[in-house]
Image 1 (cartoon, one colour):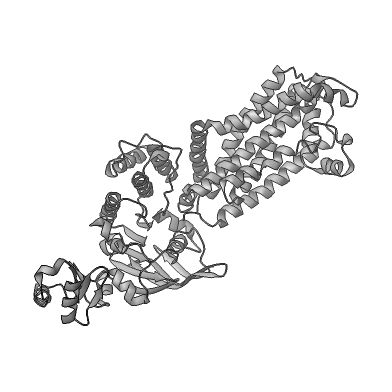
Image 2 (image 1 turned 90 degrees about the vertical axis):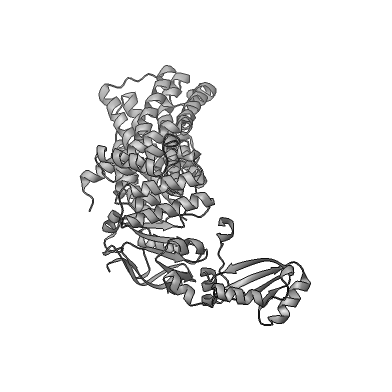
Length: 264
Length: 316
C-alpha cells in the first residue's frame, strides 16, 4: 500500500521531529556524550601510567591512550544507543506511537527515523570524542584510507547497535527499564580487548572476551588507527554487525507490529 | 443505509480473561454511536480492534467496508482516533504537533497550512499554539488531540472516552465539536462511561457489560424499556416523612435522606395528583422531578446498578 516514496517522505518527517526533540531536550545528548569523555579522561590520567606500562612491549600514558581509544569510541556508540532505547520507550508509552499506528504511516519510517536520528547524533558524538582524544595527544600513523575505513566501521557498528536498542526500547515495559537494559553494552568493552589485552584475563573471562563481538571490532579499529594489518578481525567485525543489525531489525519490526498498544 | 462499521461475532481474550465475547454491531454512516459501559467492560479493546491497533481472536469487523484484519491500511486511511489519554507529542508545540500530522498525511505545504490555521481557530488554540504541549491543561491537550485527529479529514472518528478527566466546561466543548462533526457527515464511534454523554450525543447506544452487548437502541428506546419516572419529595423531618408514607405505603422511602419516591410520568396532571396526596405542604422541604435515564436502563438490564460515574450532578 505504502510506496517507497511515501515511506521515505514519512521517514524524513519523523526524522525532523526526532531532531527537534534532541534540540528541545539536549540534556540526554550531553549526558550520553559526556559519559565516554569522562571515562577517557579517567583512564588516561588516573590509570594510564600504570596500565600503559603493562601493555605488551611496555609503554606509557600515550601508548595507553592509543590502546583504549577504540574502546572509548565503542562506549560512545553504546552510550548513544542506550539513549535511543529511552526515546523509543518514551514514544511507546506516550501514546503518540499508538496514534501513528492508526494512521496510514509507513511502519518502517517510524523506527527508521529513530535509527537515523540516533546515527546522526552518534556520528557527531564520535567526532567530538575523537577530537578530545587528539587533544589529549592521541596520534595515529594511519593514512586517510585507514581513517575512512575506521569511520565506516564505526557507522556500521552504530547502525547495528541502534537497531538493537530500538528493539530493546520496544521490548521494555517502561522508560525506566529501557534506560537500564542497554547498560550491558557499555560494559562489553571492559569484558573484551578494550582496556587490557585479553591474554591478561583469567581463563573463563578470557574465553568470553575472545568470542564476544566487541573484541574483533575494537581490534579492527585499533589496527586501522595504528596502520597495522587488520587480518581476520575485519571480516569478523563486519559479520557481527550484519548479524546484530539483521536480527535486531526483524525483532524490532515484530515488536512494533505486535505490541499491545498502550493507549489505555 | 450504508454501514460505517459492521462486526460479527467479534472476540478477544487476554490470557484467561475474555474481554469481548461475540460482539455484533452495525453503525450507520453519518451517525453517532455510543458504546457505554463500566471500566473494564471492553470498550477500549473494541476501539483498538476497529482502529487496527490489535487483532481480534475471532469474528469479523468491517470499517468503511474494509476488513480490519486483511486490509488494515485501507481502514487507516479513512479513520481518525483520539484515545483516552492524549496522544500528543509533549516536546513539540501545538503548532508543531499539527504540522507533524499534516506532513504524515502527505498534504502539500499550502493545504497543510490552510487546515492547521482552520483547526487552530476552530479549537481556540491560537494563544497556546507556540507553547510546548507538555505545558497544556487537560482540556487544552484534548482539544489539540482532536485537532490532530481531524487534520486528515477522517470520515470515521473513534473517540475513546473523550471527556474522561475533563472539567465540565471542556466536556461541553468536546460535545459541541462532536455535534459539528456529525453535521459535516462524519461518523462518530464514541465510548463513554458517562450515561449523560451517551444520552446527549448518540443516535444509538449499546450497553457493554462483561464483554457482551446487553442492550442496543436509541436512547429513547432504551429508556422506554424501564419503568417510568418519579417525583422525589424531601421532607423537613421524620414526622413529615412518616405521615406522607402512611398514605403511600408502596412508595420507596429513604429514612436517612428523608425522601419519598412517588411514581409519576412527568406530566402536569400526574404531578398535581401526586402533590394533592401529600398530607401537609409545610413539611415538604423540596421536590425534584426524575425522568428515566440510562442509569435506570442499566439497573433494569443488568440487575446491578451502573458502576459508572454519573456526572449529571456536577453538570447541573
